[in-house]
Image (cartoon, rainbow, N blue to C red; front, side, top):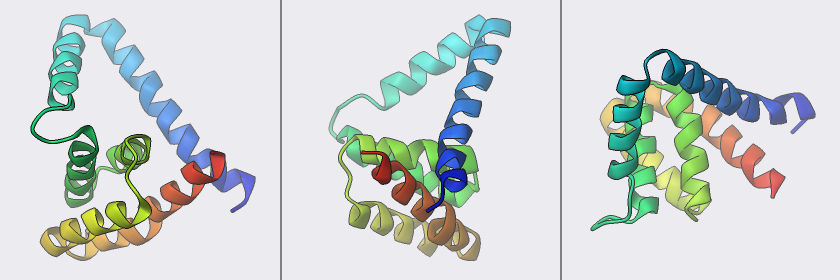
Length: 120
């Protein structure tokens, strides 16, 4: 994969983080509450952090949220999910969300896996 493609995932993650930062500055109470809620949802519990990231990836595919697809693919990898586990989670999302989820799973998610694992 060339350098331009490699920076696409990192650039999307950076863009998202900058947007969250700006939003937090402008609406600190709302952003703070949302961030605290989200953080609590992703804590280790009856489900592992990895399982929660896999669920979030599936939901992001079903809802066609590209930033979340990238963010949660990275989250899956960060929590130790294998490529096979990630792709199986994508398969479940595709079973529910159809062709639109499939198109993202076979393009964006696979690109993210490749780009993010090539860094390490």
